[in-house]
Image (cartoon, rainbow, N blue to C red; front, top):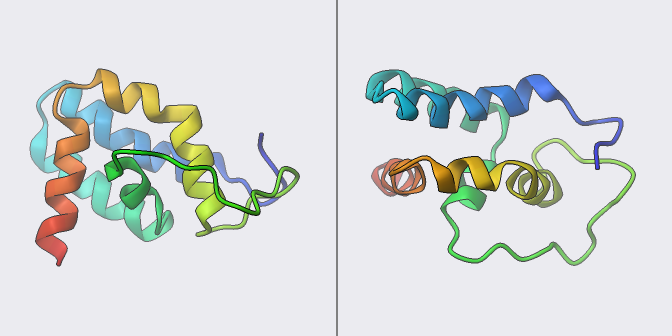
Length: 100
């Protein structure tokens, strides 16, 4: 479900985080998460959620950059990789908690 505003480069930035964690590259994962959060403002918060609810007005044709729909769709397409990477979701939760 990718619309005109969808940008795979933004998605790849976020994927760098769990890929770095798979090789225990903590500093690289931290830097990747920081960069991904700047590009995908709500994705880190979506990753950290315990339950992922579909946004009320999910747009099926277009994905708005920085929107809840983008974050939710990212999770639906990539959540399994985060779940399969030991400690990855907790890493994001800790990152967000330190940001305040």
